[in-house]
Image 1 (cartoon, rainbow, N blue to C red):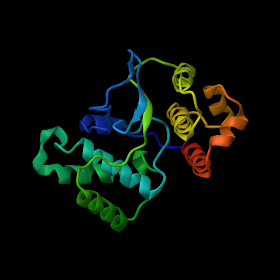
Image 2: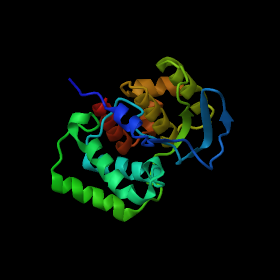
Image 3: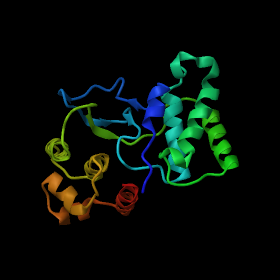
Image 4: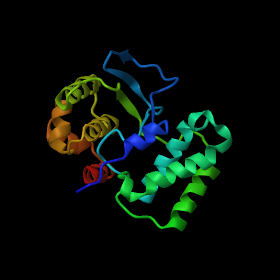
Length: 212
């Protein structure tokens, strides 16, 4: 059985692992969500779905985001930032704490951590998002995906960005991604989705589904 994430530890330590867009202005905002017609790269919502960290690359990205979000210091103690973050990174990388699916050797882990520190605290590369659901929105899976389909369907064209947005929201909701699911959300045929989906996105579907 898969180990549940120890989110209580992060919350007790007041570690930041979520950030909504800071300067990007939503085209539509309701009590439940924000919609960015042109997309935003400023949304960082770690541990938002059931998907766990399965690769070194993903682990490093999570560390970069955590470092960026907590650059002012955990509990405001900027002096000990790197010591604090090293402690947090090692907790995340410990398979027994439920965040990763693999064991990692100490030397490899230390090298990854040092590389994160060397890169500084700039905003890490991120996926573009159009829909950002607010915490504690009370929406069911079907309601969320209905909103996704409605908003993404505003576009007059079906392209990889819209398909990818559907994929991410299906994954965030803890469901398995399928071509049929994407087609239903976009109100198009499976053939239309296949016509606009690249091999990279097909592989990403496989990767995301394996993490659920």
